[in-house]
Image (cartoon, rainbow, N blue to C red; front, top):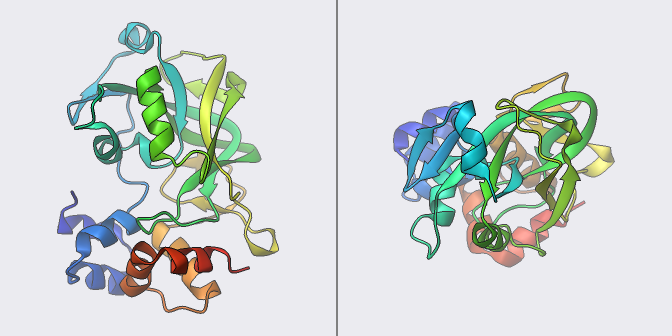
Amino acid sequence: MFSLSDAHMITDSVLREQVEQHPRAQELLRAFLYPYPAPDHDFVFRGGEVIPISDGDIGPITSGRTPVLAVGSNRAPLQLSRKFTHQNLSDEIPVTHGWMMHHDIVYSTHLTGYGSVPATLAPSPGTRVRVSVTWLTPQQLAHMHVTESVPAHYSYQQLQGRDLELDCGVRPDHIGIYQSVRGHVFERGAVYALSAIEARDRRFKSLEQWEMIEHFAKRAGRRHGPGFVLRVIDDVEFRWSVVDVG
């Protein structure tokens, strides 16, 4: 759950006030605040809590688990809680952090059922982007596939680990990744990076989540704001009509 005070992260003052005063503020915050705040240190998510871990503990904690890049909200405790807590499987998930070379984290060309424009990984020669890695058991990985709508919205792939440098020094040979099946290239070849994700030598224009939602609204000839997002959430046919513009 979000607090109304979290609306301060929406930098557009008019939109922020509209969200704060809206009876469906929780749903709007879920849309506009994606990919959600997350610690920038290695931790274990367990029972809804964030427990810091030191480098020396990484090996035993991650043993037997599959490393999976979390380029969007899957690095955030809020999302991990939503996806795994109260499910009929363990919610203990190690999360490590590092840098991905020659890639960037960008917006997909589709909208989620909760109103956000989600993230995907894109090649970007010379760019270093901050990434997170969730270490999942086979049961957790199978459940994550369901939450990522594989294969409807994302395909699960394996990447070689040569471009990944984790802070803890672990170097996995391969790493899993959920890639958008819709792609990340918008009209006229535009690619938009997530401003919420740190990157160095970024090549693509970066936008905040609310700015990216506004982009979808404008290209569909719709007025941007809470009403647009809530219709995206409530009306599946409308959502896909907006996505398919252009």
